[in-house]
Structures are given as C-alpha cells and as structure tokens.
Length: 280
Image (cartoon, rainbow, N blue to C red):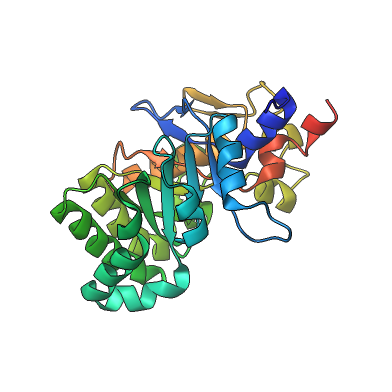
C-alpha cells in the first residue's frame, strides 16, 4: 500500500522522536514512532493498524496501557519496538506493594515477552507534578529491580510534560517548579543511573495561544528558518527546540547531565503548522 508524501508527513507529525547531544542540540531520530491511541469511534482493528504501520516502516509505537488486543496483534512483529504504559489509576496500588508490581508484570507483560518486542514501560502519563506524582518513583524502582533481576532488555521510564518548567525563556534560564524538583528530580536521578531516557511532551502551541501578540506563529509551527530567540551562542528558529533545551538546562541545574530525552508530540497544530500540509 502506497501513501503520499503528505500523508507520510502527517504520520510523522503524530510523534517526533528526538535526542540531544553533549552540546545541547536537538537531533532527529532515524526512525518514526507513533502513539497508538484507542479513544474514538469506528477504529480499525489492531491487526489492521499494525499492518499499516509495517507498510510505512513504523518501527516504534507507544500504547497508553497494556491493551490485550493490541499486544496480541503485535505478536511476531519483533521489528516493532513497543512502549507500554502503566495506567495512572493503577499507580496507587502498585506504589504500595512490590508484590503488586510483580503481579501487574505477570499479567500484562509476561505473556508477551516471547514474541512481542516490549522495549519500554512508562509509569504514568504526565502525573508529575501533581497529587499522584509521588507514586511514580516507587513503581519505577520496583519495575527496574524486576527487569534487572531477570536480565530483561526493558527500560523503565515515565512521561512528563513541559509544565514541570517554572521558567523556559531564555532556554539557559530553564528551571523546574518546586513541586517538580520534589517529584521529578529523584526520577531523573534514577533514570540517570540506568541510562534510560525521560519521555517529555512539549506543546509549542499553548504558549503561542496564551500570548499570540508576542510569539510569532511561524516560530511556534516550524515555519521559519530565521532566528527568533538568541541565547548566548545558540539561536532558535522554533519554539520546540527552545523549550526542549530549557528542559535540558533545568535537568543540568539539578545535577542530571547527558540524560537522553524522548518526545511524544500531541500538539499537532504546532508540529504540522496548522494542518498546512493539506493545502500545500
């Protein structure tokens, strides 16, 4: 099945996988990953979705919970690296008991290990900072100990949003909120010990929407190559890079350096430029 370049670009807009090097520059990954959401009507079957992903060379997907239909559809497709999420509503019970974590793993992950390439487990989705944010670390620790004891090639992380930043402009002034420092920094230090990426969601559209008179639309939507923000030797032509680097600076100020970052984009207007790809 063939897809136009515009449609392929649409798929690539859903999730952008990025990393940073020691000079705090953003670099695109070699392959595209997609968030596989299941909220909607008349959705195609998981097997059809997986076949579609394979036909357009998608090699990474993320599901937000251990959905059995999706995981069964992934059996035998070990060329697709899968990230499985722990549901937010399960965190309290899992944080209270390491045995509960072992039970969750035995039920939701164990049955698929032989023929599904489960590469990541993410503990919670944007719950740090927040009322249940403190539950993330103990669950991550228990899962990390579990996969390590069994020598399984599964990385344990969590997903956070840019709301953890108290300041993001200019990027070198990036710093976390007090609650983020309390809940997020211990998580970052655990990830640093295991050399596991932190997943960070960045939404350039929201700063633009809150102050459109001061923030150029093209800067928020990747539609200019002109330098809009100059921060020392680094110039920024888009807000995504600026916020990304602010997060890096904030981590470094907490003593966490060179920790990889993976970004899952849901701010589709910001990434795709107000859907201009449909009209180009």
